[in-house]
Length: 127
Image 1 (cartoon, rainbow, N blue to C red):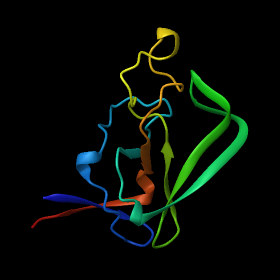
Image 2 (image 1 turned 180 degrees about the vertical axis):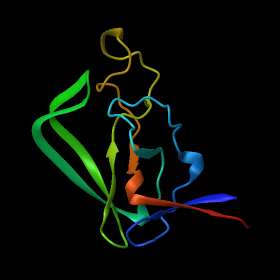
Image 3 (image 1 turned 60 degrees about the vertical axis):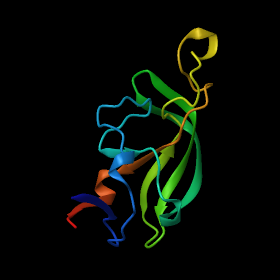
Image 4 (image 1 turned 180 degrees about the horizontal axis):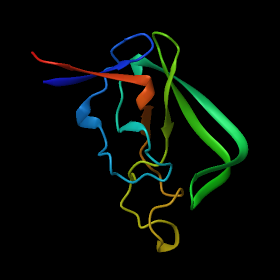
């Protein structure tokens, strides 16, 4: 049985693979509430738009900033916003980080494709 993730607005298959899904309890600096996070997506199904906001924002109690840079993930079929790309995935290197304090924003990180639960429908299909 395979899980198929579709756009809630238009019903298009987004070709998201459950094997690339991060576990629900995996820690991310930008949080993971009410969303599904994937390590890899099929870029032919989406359009990506850069977003740059300059205003205070708070993701968690200890994670805040003035400038937020992220990328919108938009469904190619209907143009609906389905999620965002964050740069807080697992580190690309085994480095202990700047000054030996562990991974930080200075250490290059894998992108994380975070999809809103309310923007997806989940279907099961058997072959």
